[in-house]
View 1 (cartoon, each protein chain N blue to C red):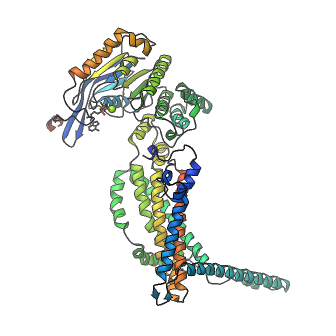
View 2 (view 1 turned 135 degrees about the vertical axis):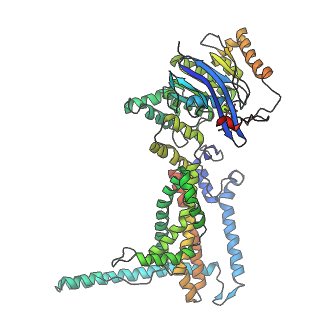
View 3 (view 1 turned 90 degrees about the vertical axis):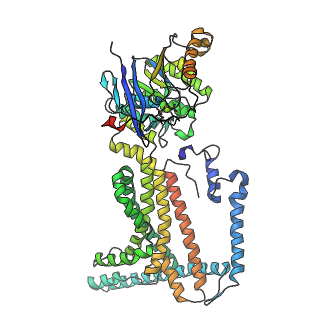
Length: 282
Length: 343
Ligand SMILES: Nc1ncnc2c1ncn2[C@@H]1O[C@H](COP(=O)(O)OP(=O)(O)OP(=O)(O)O)[C@@H](O)[C@H]1O
Ligand SMILES: [Mg+2]
């Protein structure tokens, strides 16, 4: 079977003032349609970089990404991104933020009225129909993130890419958001790639958890299949031994095998960056 | 970014908060001072200033007599107003007389040529203080609008195109610090050379002043627009890329709105500079306007001159303040950044 989204031996090398720095190496992953995959790893290892390559916002130095067997060369609405910092346009209302995306994607295929309905429908999905005319600075962080998700969903993307979508939220709001994401995903059967720092979130939401080694030259260290029945209920899971087993696996990976005694930062690691000989590049 | 500015949110009574802000010129100490900060302290400041002024002025003897205190200045202010009214009265009387003569001429069956001559007569009084204010306002508005129309597009291109910016930057840096007084002779000569018509729509002196204002107004707007356009949030640009917005839509929907607060900041700076420049230019070039009024009074050297100049100084300051507030109100109205700080 051909995979839906294929990340094929992707590597990326950045030019830095100190020379070339290989951030990702040999990332390979096949994702099926309707699958929820989360990426977990220490800060700065390159998770966002992977996501940006899939989104087309960055070009891989080696390898490539195939979506339905076509190579990804530029960003596009079939790979909608939910950014960590919501990224709503502050001068547009909640409605207009989503409407902009709807107009752009369905401008030719839907009538004005249909686009209006579709905008409202997606905002209703994330329970934001009461705040259509508010601007981003007038709503809470959780609400902004929900609008960001509605905007992404409204594009009817083949893949939903989420970069720590709930990272900036308080834990109660985060719980709500996770539940609504599961509910929406169950209903629409979206393919989701999600970055998270939160082990519980990874286990709760994912079909597979992809654990990345530390950078530079980060790659996939281990892939964990999460075989828990859906719909999942966080309270019921808390009682379930398999849940704790999965959780322990991830924690073990992150803390025992790859938590080297150094500062965790989003900057390049403190150790000497691996400078490639320039000749390698011609 | 300003969107994350949490100090002034739309909780509670935004209009009241805004009104107090406006009066006190500051939102920071609102909670601590309340009404005192909003009204009493500014009044106190003005009161102390007036006291020091009148006490100090009494000590200074100039060649034109004693330095006037607030009372004399107030008196001259009223005089200037009265003179303006009187002048208007004379003008009205003149046009009334003219109308009468015209009617009579028509009744007497005079030739069309004669009638036209009568009609063509214009009242030729001296411009009053209030007239000079209008002249200055119109001149500064013209110069400022012209500058904005030129500067904003240039700034947008500079912000979007690094090569163009690299080419423009030395010019901007060199011309920005040039004083209006250095531009003035050049502009005067160039206008005289190029603006030759028998039936001028606007006077040469007006054009000279306005262009001088333009030359000094360009730079802050160009620079701020460039910065605003060049520093659009990277995440927002990524949104635009994911949506595959075309070049035009991206400019109109993302880049321009995002740069709007900076563009307004630049325009506000420009207008402030333009107003200062204009007064200097009018003074030096003897072009009609408030600057000429000040200069004429200075040359005139009557015992009232100093007080009249002080009236002009206060009016110039007050108009500058109003122009700045006006720009801020425009910014509030047209920019999404409702938290722009009132200062
Ligand atoms: N354009 C770039 N040039 C040079 N280095 C870069 C560039 N972009 C990212 N990096 C480096 O690549 C590494 C991975 O960055 P990335 O943002 O993908 O990490 P991350 O895993 O998402 O971290 P976090 O969990 O903190 O978000 C970091 O060390 C970062 O400094
Ligand atoms: Mg990241």
